[in-house]
Length: 113
Image 1 (cartoon, rainbow, N blue to C red):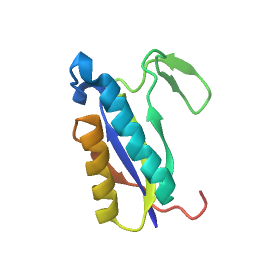
Image 2 (image 1 turned 90 degrees about the vertical axis):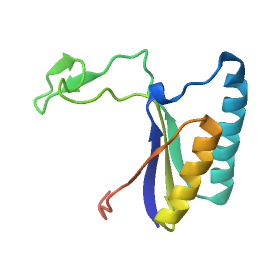
Image 3 (image 1 turned 45 degrees about the horizontal axis):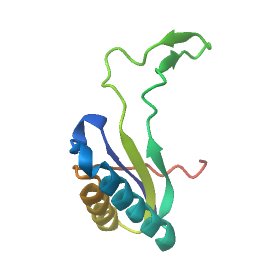
């Protein structure tokens, strides 16, 4: 079984104000289905009210993330499934529930993690 990250940036979720309750209900239903299926690892969203900091190898803390990198925000879900096809199917389900496309990435296997 492999772990996959399903994610979307905040800007991808363009939802009319009256539809947020349905999006919440639908996305939580898919997450519950993943839990029941035994493929859910964890999920959530980046708390955008807490600004990121960059921590050096020496422990120095600097406000902000990497200046050259894209802003990391939005929501994510990590699933452990038998195949990439299964991950794609789950990404499509969460995409339908969230009303936006999802990015899918495979985690590299590290036997020591």
